[in-house]
Each structure stands twice: as C-alpha cells, then as structure tokens.
Image 1: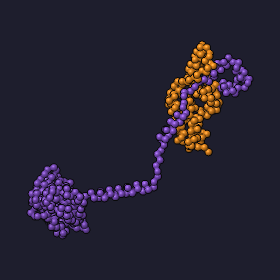
Image 2: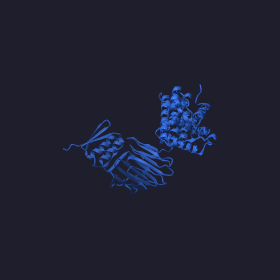
Image 3: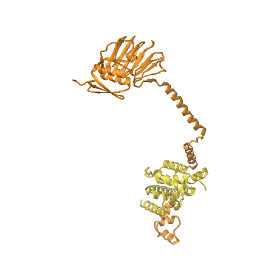
Image 4: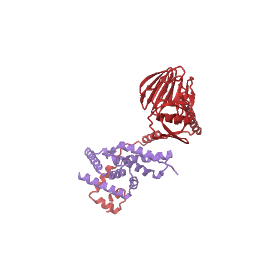
Length: 303
Length: 165
C-alpha cells in the first residue's frame, strides 16, 4: 500500500488493485462510516453578505478624510501669522518701559509726562512706563539721579536697595553698589529700606553703606552739588568717592597702599580733572599719577 | 490587469473566500466570534494593502493574515459542529438505528476535538468545504504531500479512536 493511502483513497487516487486490497481490509467499513458521517457535518452559519456590509462600514469609518487643497489657503495662513507678529510686536514695544541711561562722564535730563524732572548723573539709568504714568508714577533707578517731582499722586522710585516714595518734592537718590543715599531738598520723602520706613523732611539725608544705615549730615543747598558740576562728600568711605570720580571722568582709578575705608569729607570738581585729583589727594595725603585714562593713587611716602 | 483595489474585484474575492476563511479559523480554534473577527481583520488588511497584493495571491494572503492573527494568542476551544438534518429517507429508519447514529456522531465529535489542530482543519476543510488537498496546501502554506499526510493521519486516528472506544 502506498504512502498516505487513506488520503489517496478519499481523493480517488488509488489504483484499482490498491482499492480492491483496501476494500478487503477489516478497517474498510469503519473508514467508510467515518466518511459517511462526516459528510453530513456542517460548520456554523456564516452570512457572507452581512459580513461584507459590516466590512464596508468599517472601511468607510476608517477612510481618511478628503481635504481640498487650496493654494490660497496657504498664503492666508502665512499672512495671518505675519499680521499677528506685527500687531503683537507693536503692542509689545508699546508696553515696554521707557528707559534712559547715561554713560560715564555723561549727564542727562528727563522730563516725565507730568513735567516732573529727573537729572541723571553719570553711569545711571532710569526706566518708567509711559503708558501707565497717569495711573502709577513709578521709576526704577540704577545709579544716581535728582528728582524734581510735580505735585500729584504718589511718586515712587524703586531701587535695588530700597524704595523712595513722595508726593511732590525735590530729592536726590544715589543707588550704587553697596551704597544707598537719599537726600531731600524740598517737601517730605519716605524711604523704605530693608522694610523700615524713614521719613525725610527737607534738608535731611538718608545713607546706607553695605546695608548699614549711617548717620548723615543735612545738606545746606537746594539741590545736590553734582547738578552744579561738583561732587560733595561728607564722611564717605574713600572707595565710593573714587568710584564717583571714575564715573564723572570716565577713567579707571587704581590705588596702591591706600585705605579705601578712610572717610572723606570734601568736594571735587566734575569739570576739571586736575583740580578734582588735587581735591581728593591733598586732604587724604596721597599722590597721584595720570597715564592716559588711568589714574593711580598711592600713599605719600612717610618720611 | 485586475486590481484588488477595485471595488468589484474586492467584493468578488470576499464572496468566494470569506466563508472558507471563517471555517478555516473556526476549525482551528473552535471560536465562532474570533472566526468572524478574523474574516473582518483579514479583509481590512487586504484592502489596506490592495495595491501590493496581486488578485491571484489575495487568497493565500487572507489565510496568512487570519492565521497569524490568532497564532499563539487564543487557546483552542471545543469545535462544535452541526450535522445536517437527516433526509426523509433516513428518518424512515428504525429508532434504534437513529439512536445508534446519534451516538456515533457524538463519538466522532469527541474524537475530532482530540485531533491535532492541523489534522482537524485539513479533515474538515476537505469533508465540509469540499476543498481539494492542493487548495488546503495553499491555505496552510505547506506542500500537498504534507496535507495528504495530515489527512491520512486524521483518518487513521479517527478510526482507531472510534473503534477503540
């Protein structure tokens, strides 16, 4: 009998001889019965049309959406973005604070929208919001400036060290590294320093060096001396005096064997460097050398 | 040349093959619901790839997709098959004969379920769907000889177990 003869028998591929032999075998009847019985077997119902319509439903549900191409649309999109950028930057620039700054050896005068005046000393910067000026008179200051405030709502000067608030007055604020001085020339100024409020009447001064409030003498002038091209100091550490000198003349000051914490009382000119150098060196018993933009102060040789 | 993406070609492929795909999966796993899903899945895949599948290859593509879908995923369940209602002629038989007949069918059912999946599928595709060995070989992706072997073994096992019980 050949290989897989049962399969061959079923498909009618057996030779006559093989078939006759198979029919004689004892199992033939059993096989015959299996084939007969299995021929009446049925698989579960399957509705082809229903399955097809279900499939089509699924397919249309998943079909990608058709998007009409419109070249003009692309242009519109770009145009919209450009328009948005332009209006956006317009409002952004408008809302930016107005800012005025001075370089070293330079001074500037600022007239605010309410005719208040600010005179900026060298190496200083003020910024304020022109748009909101009517609602809020707020100035941010870096450096030193003299304020002549027109009467009106509260006028605030914010600095890194403290806040100065007034109604209408004339006052000077100096806000340098480690140095904060407010001098009131007219009216009443309120200084908030480290959360403490100090009220300064006309002719009074508030001074803090390195975060420490120092006693300070009252000026006997109607405006700060620097407005008249002089820098005045009263018991101020020499380091800050030299810092002011650098700003007024845009020079670099170096020292040799000089104690910068020495207190200096005096005035130097903001227009004549030689005079200014003499004014500083003589009372402090120092010598100086000028090399281009560099000035070197050195201690007088002790005899 | 005909393209599977054409609605008519696709529909005709569906009409000729869906029932067999259904039975094929059912014989393998004995799960009617999964068999229905397999038909859907296989034809959706065919439609998605209609541009890449030649119409003459569509058939084997369908069986491959349907088979892979549940390969190692679902546990085979009991295959429940119905028997065609006895014809009038047969119903004239004696009650004893009918009872015997019924008992025999139950035996056959049981033994069929005990067959290895590939032998059962081959046997039922041939007996119920009247598929030729060559066609079954194409569906299963094996040689005709392998199908003949499965058929031979299926018959042999069926007889041994039915006679043995």
